[in-house]
Length: 336
Image (cartoon, rainbow, N blue to C red; front, top):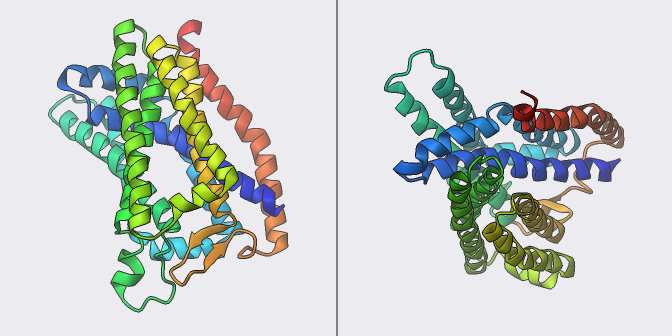
């Protein structure tokens, strides 16, 4: 059951990035939209994600539960040494959700709408930024379980160039996914052209920020770049993601929205798989050249077995309902 638990953990992280990340990205592209397109972006964003935005946080909750129950040492290390970026990320989720609701359902349309809009777009940027910072902290090897100072124990693990670069990379990924998904939601050629342009710019930003991650990893001697080059499977995944860029841009120019969506999801999946495969079974790299393993630092076997069965049985009920939720709102205009 251990590998089933690990598979669900990886799948939950991937799906949260693909779907929850796209929700955050909607606010990101609104933040960087011009005055002429901001209102159009805002209306289409609400129409696309309004009914289902809350469901995407299910994947984050599942990730937390799996770590808490099945991998308590990793959970404790993360929540103790990274509690500051975790709190900022959680406050961002709350602020974003609150602003999203109030700017559409506030009974009085006054100047507070500007406040709601600002909270929504900036929390949409800050939340994935710190989500990426947390991810970067797990790979940086700067978490020190024996730290004796506040800075070394709770600031240095995440407030560094590498972790921040991973945060910016995550922001760009979210913006790119949102732009790609919203191409298919556009009902006119002009609207589609707006999001095709945004997808191109966000894709360029994603590539550049990804290169920045590699450069900083070499400067800070973290070794993720060399690790990807020397691991054949990870290298093949990165090559596949890179080659698919040419097809993605071709489909963007031709306006083939479904193929663009598939390729965008494929690229992010390959990137996450490459990094995960390189580091596995390590989940948290520590400063003393050791790591917290998903294969060794686990809960008792009985707990892992119960968790595995709970995930399997739960997925039989949750996944069909979730897919029907997406399907119903994708086809609501055709039905009515």
